[in-house]
Length: 74
Image (cartoon, rainbow, N blue to C red):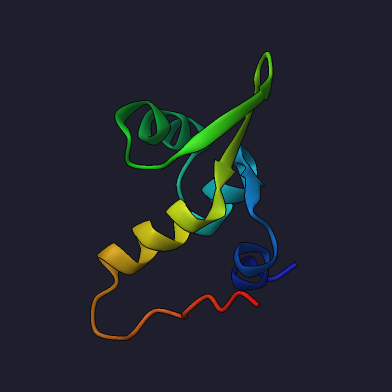
């Protein structure tokens, strides 16, 4: 599935999905959640999901030279 489509279709992303979209390692995603750069929720022991809107916000915040894709929710 295309990364942008995944970001638009899902509210919660697996750590691996967020890492792939952001082009960073899983461990970087975990660190960014710990420092507040990304937000997530624990579904059970050891199961972390990342809020897709925080991934989109991080991309928009660091976007240079073009306008980021807007997320439209109906």
